[in-house]
Image (tube, rainbow, N blue to C red; front, side):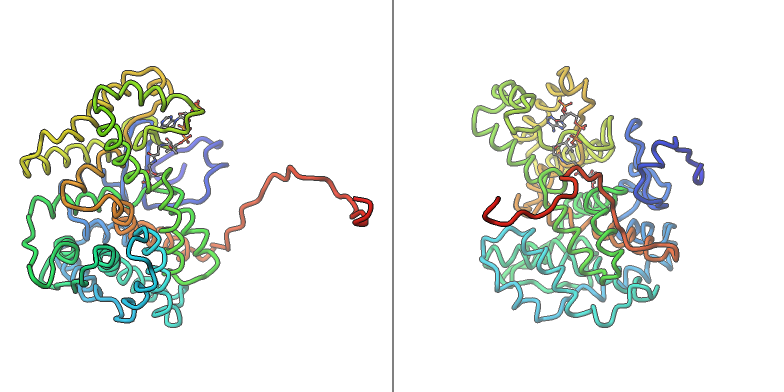
Length: 396
Ligand code: SDX
């Protein structure tokens, strides 16, 4: 019995840590941030309110929200030297390679003034990381597009500011479209935290050595890049576009057959989950957002959306997926929404990292704030050779 939830002893024996931040019930398809259902947060709050909740344990009141938003807004710029770091990359470098480097490079500006064991330093690091990630993601995009960087504009909201840094140029301002800004903000909320997933566990283990939070978050970015994790949103859209190019809806049967063949190396990207053995609640919200955005843009008949919906229907009626409790996860529809907003496919995972930064830093700060925490040291089950003596080279 921990708090209001009870766990079977078997679960607790495999748990890597205790946390009060996010609760997932994989069988029910339930996701709570600090006790609040994701469905309510995604429709009644904005991303910075959700950041405040994840960091502090309570939703902010008007005064707290105003103060938090102001602090984040006034930390959105990055040191001008960061531009020179970007220049070391080829223009066609993957944005996640660039982000792994840029976030790690933030350490160079703050590590010597950040004592992770100081609660005030943990708090300002969280503000800086949440504030600067949109600026860095937009810089990575502009660099790949050969366009000049756009500075943050403090009069805009957090998410509208990100979109103007992405889509504005010195020749033309970006007029925020409220529906698209709201959709982007909801994507951030849906990706903000997710209990002890691979990248969050990476951040915890890395941060447990006492390294600075910027280095620990860079480790999380690197882990998230993998196609089995955050890279799945990019892989899912590439999969849909590939099927579309090779025959579209008529080709779904062939693809499903491949995805069921373990030797094919093909997986239905955006399907399945380590924890959810029911519908990922985020996938439902993402599908609703998809319909809203495409309807708003007048492209509700987008063939890729139709293909995704047909693929989902066929998979959910197929014994292989049903018997293995494989359902769409957060990544299945998120790419279609982002593509409609104008985000390039290669940037999808970087946007996932932007949103997940608050979850990573909240989980890291929770661990470091526990006086009982120690450096992580996973053990192993040794399966190698028993002790033996070295033989002289001539006798080997
Ligand atoms: C995220 O942990 C998190 O919380 C992550 C995340 C977060 O917010 O941080 O939710 C974000 O990473 C979501 C997952 C994104 N990844 C993908 O969409 C990639 C495609 N999905 C798979 O690679 C897979 O489903 C995993 C990696 C997500 C989970 O893999 P598991 O642990 O092997 O899944 P499982 O144990 O439930 O698999 C059961 C069976 C296995 O086959 P059998 O051994 O029973 O024959 O189902 C098969 C798997 O091979 N299977 C799939 C499949 N996913 C699992 N077969 C085809 N297509 C798939 N997508």
